[in-house]
Length: 389
Image 1: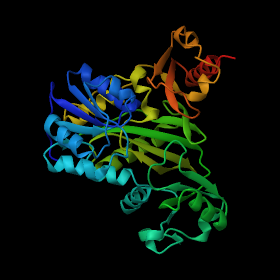
Image 2: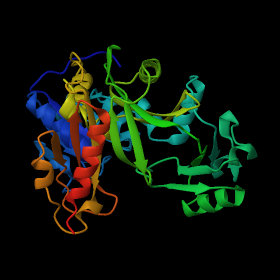
Image 3: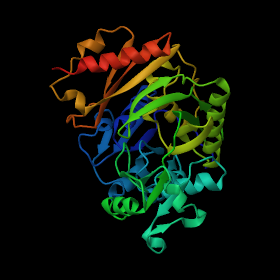
Image 4: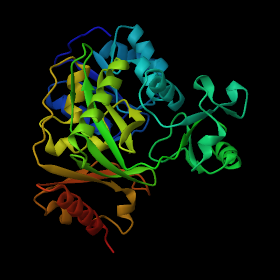
């Protein structure tokens, strides 16, 4: 992708209308851009803050024509817009960032694992389930599936569309793997060895088309039922490991020729880093940047895709903890927001979603402190106090 600068009041198109798109478009509007969001959900959070909301399929021909005429750049807030639609826009001269090739890789776990392996990035043992390659268990082009992978158990994940623990099943033997594959619809899947990891980390980086990049401090994460529950920054790891994690994320961004904000999720296993997954967009574990960074990941996304100077990523607090607010918090009625809003070091973020459901991300809260353990403890206590009995 050749460098191109897009300045206000140009129009930015956003594929996807979730909370990530909402925050990015709020940043864009503050910077003076006009915004258009595409999302078939008429109540999509980003639609409420965009100048125009096109409530159609992402590959609707009329919508793509409109974007090609109106938008100076089109970006995305999730990894699953049809890559063919992005290619269609790029062929018509629209600046698409991240590029369709990077999106194709990140939206398919088989392609993502292959990209990481082919480029020498460290990953855990995995295999492929894909009946397009002859049925049954198949190691694919990397020949990585063998019965030893089952030692200690595996997780079977759909190659596409799975997120927040969806599209995943655990298995302990070959019969379990086949059953899990059947339950998941017999679609292409990856089979990943369950790793005995010490810590979960993520690194969020930004990169421009001409190769300039910035990164934020490493986040330490905790997941519950496959959904991010808690992030704390900076991570409680030594400086050398943090530097390696940032370097690994930046190298992946370079190998992808990535343009925009990229999150790289990692495991620490026996003191070494293994890449888990890529997210070609702002990331849940980077929400803290709204409240404790000189430049949020969302403003940085706009800066990167528009070819502008990247903002500084220094922290404005000693430490910060973020906890997600799932629909479960609404089980007893409207949560006790006064608990959070009365806490000077806490920030409440609600995404404008109208229907709370179990496991659905409805918002998050952050707490800053001089001491990370105090920030974590206070954030967890505030969330627990939100639920009305």
